[in-house]
Image 1 (cartoon, rainbow, N blue to C red):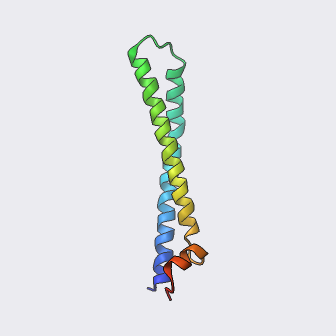
Image 2: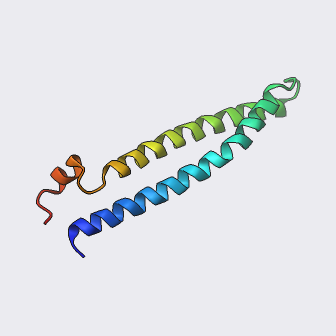
Image 3: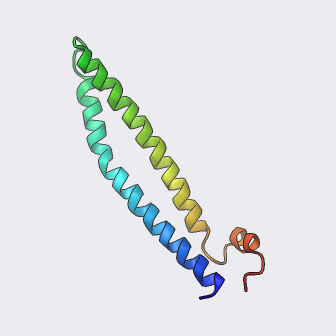
Length: 95
């Protein structure tokens, strides 16, 4: 297997793994959002309600950050396909 084929295989494998991870994380987003809105609309009379509201808000923030990061990595892996000028120049003469 040549170096060019190895880079192609690694790039496509990384892109597939990141795509599956991103789709998995996005599938949990409606549940997180529903839970946050549920506790947002409740009267904050109990400490538990306040705790759950803040917990869900923090969870949504981390989910947003993680999805942005995954899509950035996915974009980088798609752009790292063979023939892309940035990858070709970083590999030098990989012939």
